[in-house]
Image (tube, rainbow, N blue to C red; front, side, top):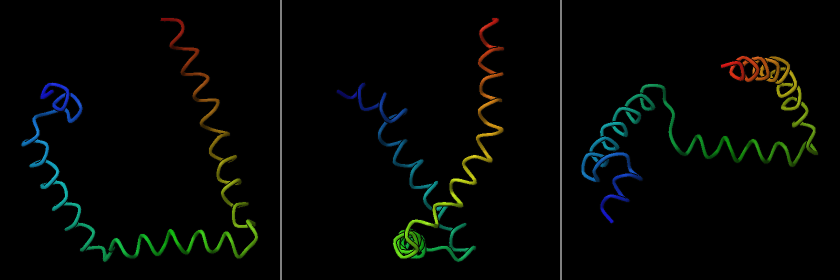
Length: 88
């Protein structure tokens, strides 16, 4: 069972917990410097969904624009990369 847990975590349980603690302290420090708090993130997500609800889903129009703009670059690049990888 320990091998399954180690394989899932990528390392031993103790080392994984220590890494998570160190990364959590660093991320918490950076978030504090920029004045970002978890409550603000949750409030932002809540505000986003309330805006969508109150605007009658017209707010998603921008998301569609961004999707099409990004897809115009990403999809052809993906196809070219896949075609080039087939030759090897």
